[in-house]
Length: 246
Image (tube, rainbow, N blue to C red):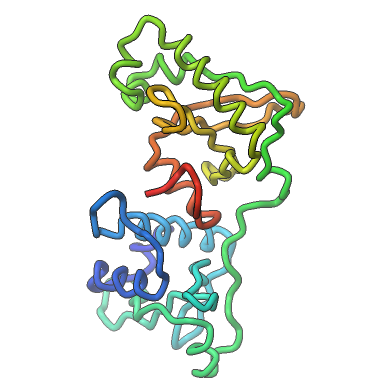
């Protein structure tokens, strides 16, 4: 179930703009003001809470926990009322409210936020383990190869360039384990590593890694653009003071 099958959102851009005012954060990439990050966050969060059965439905309203907080760290909820238009979605997105206003209105049974992490150790990179990239996927598949900088993509030495960048990444991880940023993708936690192919300290891509089943190595399954990586990582937490930013 996606958000737009569940509810009619009315002027969705205005609703998202209102939400961005409640939750102060950079929600657009570069100089855009489309709140694209926030839209992606909300829509993926809805899918997760729907999977987990965490959408509260009563006769007069429905609510889900967005997982976001206002500037005073009060939880923010999406609030729906029955859709009065026949043959449409059952619900209408009325707006976004903090816990205070819902409690004040007499709604005390508020739903929990989405859960993504079962084992907290999945969030921490083990710098002692080797990273094995899946080069057939990174270089060999056209869609993935297009994510590489053009000069690297066309180089005969791209494997060597990538291996060199990965050695620098390992030094960054040894200096600060928080360099590895967890993301939620395909119902699992992966760790994103910066890959600096053109300039030291300036990532071009993020390598998504998972541990092997025996836990002795990491598999670098694919490279993501920084925008793709940010969308996935933002589902778990804010990314303040990180190499991955809008």
